Length: 364
Figure 1 (tube, rainbow, N blue to C red):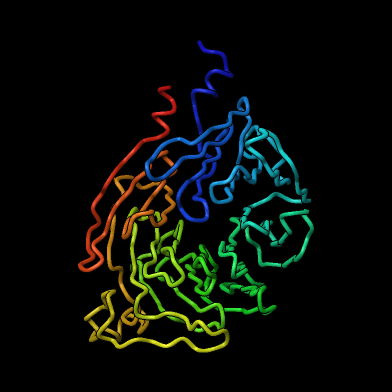
Figure 2: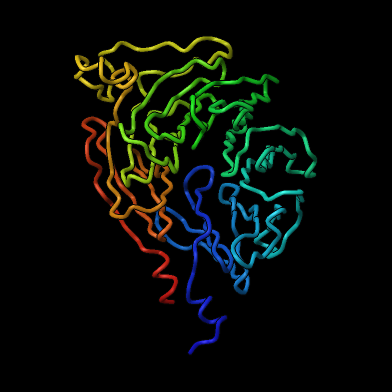
């Protein structure tokens, strides 16, 4: 029989997976270290093994050599109460942030570090690790927090102090907005790259609501389905004015919605307009005659424009690929998918590639 250490080494466990800020790479924390992969073309960029010591959070800073690491798993490499700033060129930690409770999530931009604890979100200056802002939140065990990566706009979104409420910090204009996005608890939040659009899903998982962060206006309501689901991830397409939004959930279908018909105003404090109904891409329900049975919002919300069915019902994270109208998806089983959708017709997405990267690692 193999020694216990060898058996642990053979059993590679994924603790966390996440894309970098522009979805060109993704990183995964495992029970023995962390690995970074390039999305297009797909390849492993580098890995760091810590002798069966786990990394529960790994956050990249675009494609540079600086990462934020948090220990995790049954034998954590670092304390789960610390954020370690790792320089991969030097192969060592160059800074750390310590807390009294477990770190739930970390977000990076080139000038800021944001740390989510269960009841707080804290922002630090990257250059000297100086605390700049501390925010009290409702209980946030999954570490919900979003940070705009765009250098021109510093926007943060996190849970507020009331159920279903999002607190938005517009640091450039020193303004705080509170948006009552849902009546039930939040399950997922995302910001567009410039921070002007906020997407949220609640623990019910049936609707995604899009709000303008500048004035709190609800821009769009998107329906994933009628039955409850656990929403794993939400992603805006790239660019200053995103045209698409993608969503993954425990139902195994990735949904793509069009955002063309409503966009926030570029002027802070103005109300976003809407386009003519004829430009609506996402289908709406034609069965309005049964509105006495279902809520009015069921028929007002828009269905997805395109769909991609994953062959496995496991936790997944979706983003938009480097090529137009493409999706990149990573799953907790160690699978990587790319798919394409027709921007005119929508419907079922075409799978472009598939790789079981964990099996490839274990065969080395």
